[in-house]
Length: 294
Image (cartoon, rainbow, N blue to C red; front, side, top):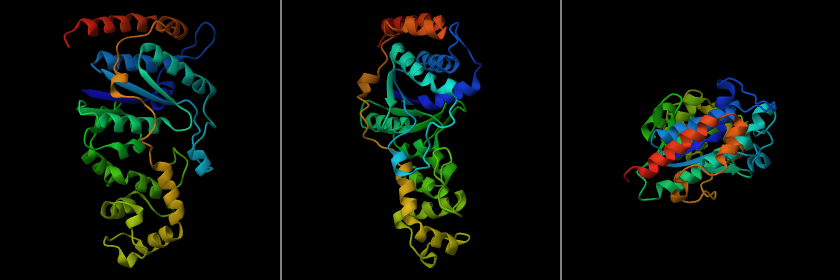
């Protein structure tokens, strides 16, 4: 069994900026929501059986209370923001498990679902469908990150090749280099190369010696970097907390993510989206799955 976990927030942004605008007769912008719905239906048509989609129903999360500069809804196009509840309703009507996150983030739901799926002995592979670097921390064993747009898979070896650190060190790595998408800056002077060199050896911030003279790795400007880390260690640990995904969000069980067909509400949602083709496609696909051998 393969489980597909989809970053609905990423997909909605990607389709909003990557597909043509589409306004209904009532003047509602629905292009991105239509794009995501059709994309997930294509995934099902290509053989996906157990699918969950996570969205940021509210952009702000508990992390905004920890760091005032953390990402929020400021600057999001209103036409995009209005499609979050719409795509959640559409995917639920399609019969797909949807996790619309409020206190936590979509990434937390994906990490939690990955943990649930990986612990299920029936599951052979867990595909986290997003290019978001935060989710690289979940990779390992059964769990693989999939960039559907680039058609690239990232197992633990590929994560190490890309970032220079093991998946478990990704939160520490982001704490040092920062994450502009999430709104925290990292530590001054700490770039990708120096962070990777240090963490490839020590793995976590807690294990990095305070004095550069005690470092077992050779890093350019080591004294300055060590002094910065010593002076701002508490802030670095806070950034690591921001970058660490929760794995205890209530996401249900693998059996609850199995797609068994659309709900009776799909035609009404698709009428609102000007997407009658989805109703027919979903119906045919559900019938084919029902009649095909197990």
